[in-house]
Length: 152
Image 1: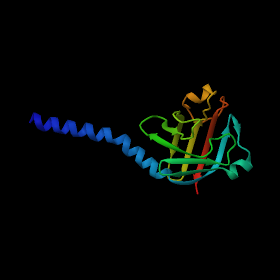
Image 2: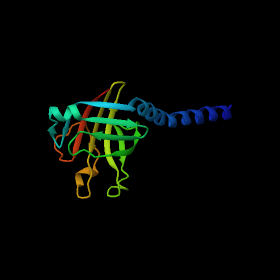
Image 3: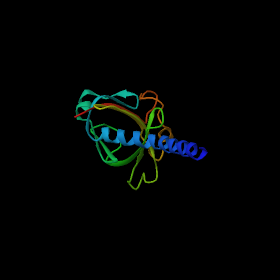
């Protein structure tokens, strides 16, 4: 009897440990594709309408690229998700030589046709880029990019 109880408890713990990974996989599937900007801000300033129309976030596998947004990171960057945190966390893992080894800290919220991202742009001389955003606002930080996106 004790053996069965131990097996049930162990199985329950294993299933609970897999839940965050499964949530991250589900989020990653929802994030795939091209996203258009509905609203956004950079450094506390709203994006101009012309920039919103040009802005795109493209997610393919575990890489994303942001185009058409001034001061946003350029090129494709690898990322990993942590769906167990609140808000959910996204770590940007750049491969460019100047930024290699640094992690860009971001948060995200995804639903079937909407995606919110907020990230701190990091540079070698930017201390503000070392903290993860606590909310989806770009106010108060010269290094923050906040985006509200819809699926194309």
